[in-house]
Length: 365
Image (tube, rainbow, N blue to C red; front, side, top):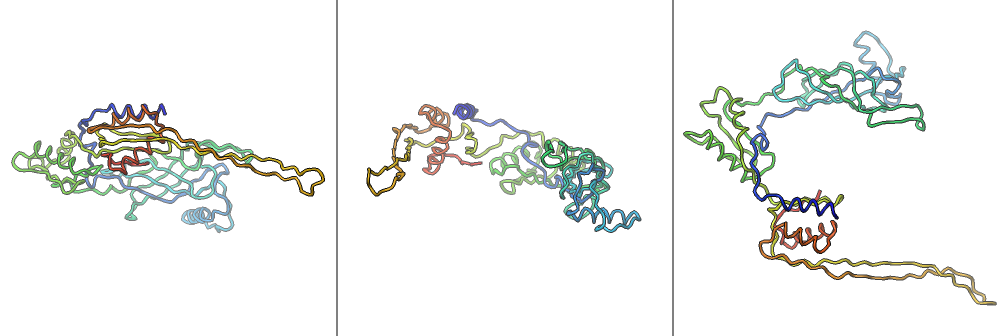
């Protein structure tokens, strides 16, 4: 109760006007993005914590790798507990060039109990277009460990079946390059027509000396033409563009986390004139057992008879009236004044939204 009241009080004290934000915090440039890479490989050098015999693909992969090195081994005739089959993933940043290094994540896909101390052997990392963009190899660093033998005598800390290799992959192919020579497409992180229009207005005021250079395509995309004076240096234009400030607009929203009882709302949330009556109805059912003993010389038997008692208690309704122009601050103070619990507040907010008295979007997470 105290925690929720504290959170609501902080939200109520927030200033109504939003602060300005730089464009780099509001938008991203279409085409300037990360690319996901994935590969299949083997981790060797494990201390008996690798895949067991029932994981067939790890033995087959080891046999295929040895065959390429001139060693022919039947995969059905080997059991190597120091090898584990893994899935290797990485993120290819935009504009990265061959020779640069990126981090990789290694995750076991068999029944290996730990990758601690293992070495990832040469693994190709491919993109969505099936092209190889990086080659990974190196020692796996795990954030945990597993010690002991049998299940009853083992100790596991954190998650030893997944790890990382810092700078473990070398880029072999540059990431796809977007065309930034003449036109930019700015993508808003959160769609809003008002914010998109404000961004276009700021860009035209800053760079559109003779004619407008920006216009909104929809509530998320702003199309920007690079000015002729900066046509030869789009990077410089982007650097100037992303440091411009804009006051973003947003919908009035209330976030409700029913699992933790947390409610967050801004002061711009308004409540229509409404009267709230809230009370609790408690129904208690008790069951007691009595022994029914027959009288002397009677032909009956002793029986255990349940006796149920139902008691209903209803609290007196607590009243809260909000007048015209009421804000969330008034709502918070009123709910606290009538002693509402977090569950009560969540129920009241949902009821206000259903009644059309709450001028905000209620999002339950």
